[in-house]
Image 1 (cartoon, rainbow, N blue to C red):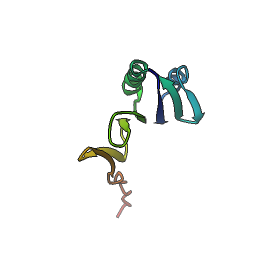
Image 2 (image 1 turned 90 degrees about the horizontal axis):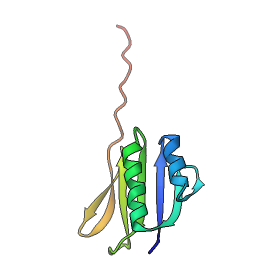
Image 3 (image 1 turned 180 degrees about the horizontal axis):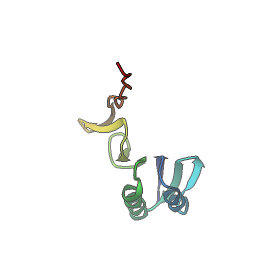
Image 4 (image 1 turned 30 degrees about the vertical axis):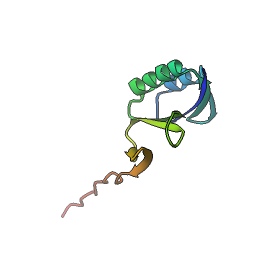
Amino acid sequence: MASMLVIATTAVPDHLRGALSRWTSEVVPGIFVGSVSARVRDELWQAVTQTVGDGAAVLVHPAPTEQGYAIRTAGTRRRVPEDFDGLTLIRMTAPPKVKEMQSPS
C-alpha cells in the first residue's frame, strides 16, 4: 500500500535530485513529495544516505506512532530528532564555531 512521504534536501548533488524526482514531485527547490510503497521509500532513502555528501536530508513518512509519523535524517544538521518517551522531539545543537581571523601583532 502506498503512503505519502516528504523528503527535504539541502546542498545535495543534482543527480540525487534527479533520482528523487523520478518517484516524487519537487514542489519547491529541495522539497520532494510523493506517494510510494514502503519498499520504494526505503530504497529511495538508501540512495539519499549514500549520496548526500556534504549536504543534508530529512525524510518524514507515516508510521504507527503516537504522532503518526517517523523522521529520518542524513548528513549534518543542527536539528536532531530525539526520542522522548515515545515522542520524537527536535533538539537544536550549537551552531558551528567560526574561527576568528587573527591580525598580525
